[in-house]
Length: 636
Image (cartoon, rainbow, N blue to C red; front, side, top):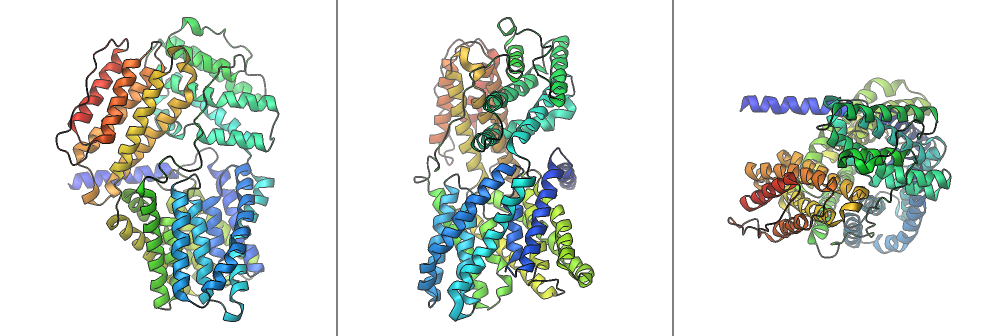
């Protein structure tokens, strides 16, 4: 057991160090976040805007590498927040005299907006809106009665508008815009394909996993922003529209060909891609010195690489399929009780924290309520994982804050000095937050704990009591979120993993039904399947963080991992196949339906019906058989 614990600790340390390592674009995103945080803190000090720490937190939480997205989202948020504050006037008038009515309004508003965020594309924005409303209502007990409405509205509006305004203006002039980021992404994908084909597999496995988990949705979003804001010409937009799926196809096929085929063929493709990278760097046409298109006489994997190269070079224009355009709300938004349960749990944690510090008359720990809105997540494992990250980040940020209060703040005499200090601290927080989802929440918490400790009042301070109270509030909020997540309608990670397994199996069945002649253009479906499989792998990564009574058995977890591997292999086999696969699609549909209807408490599941057919791709047939054995032999 000691050996296993030591190995787990060693693996965790290695993973953390890997997540903290530099990667292209990380430093650029970090200094921009730190600069805007410093700017927000300086303006808040100069103009006496309250709760500057929450304003800085919103910058770290919301600011993205894409300047166009930042500008649009922040500008829309300014309008939405202003309308929200105006609409809050009658609510404030009705709650100013009654604490009971105030709490009731907080409960209803929190539930509605957290539910909308969980069940729609609004996402975490719903929790932010709920936080603003709750914060505004709590200000009623903190300001003079005769000016409660005007002061509460002004405080909430200034606190929320300031970071949005700074993000929008800064990103407009100094942000990296969508077209530039898409060009960088294209180069990174070309480099990854080159490394795969030239035999640098040991160095590219991690990059390949990250690439597959990324998919094309973020790139397609950047493309839409480029079109909306007219960042470049229509011809270039049309080429980028081809580059996104073609570059995914290139890397996906290169990864498949890297393990087979003739070495000289791989090296020829690698040399061609190297030429394209040089041309891209020098602003030259990518079509120069390319070999002729021979996709009709090549193997499926080589044909896909050749097609992608000629598509990126602008020689051919394949009719790539588009990703599905889902509506604002999720398909099961109003039928699946999970979203309502999540909204109720988060609201309960926040309200209990508010009532706790209000009853004790200890406003210094009001960060407990703030933490509930930003810390609650869908599954118990994800919540506990983020809980560990937040507590670690909170302690690091608080330690940085105490050091600053004791040794640095007494020597600061100007707002500029305080801004430099905030810049340095939020640079650390931003660097961690820019990492993978395995550590990013720790960075957000470092920034929140630090600013809550240091940004007290409207100038430098040496008061450690306030810093202590705010850190205690963060810890209380995390504990409250943990308790409601684990003991009230707990959602196991395994349930999310199984839901995603079903979704991926259905999508793979749909891919198998695509006519063989059109399958190479169906890159969007492959990207969606690979992204879902990456989400499932992340679910299994979270299993050790779950309470023991919610974890699946080791056999079930191992079966799930084998299922993922088999699906990934079948995806490759189906995508690169040149034959019709109705039998494969039928068996996959039956597997998905079996997973949907199977009761996890049933010890003897009914096996799905077998279908005997001819499978030109024996590897796909073998993997399908493995899947059926896994499903009928374990509680997936």
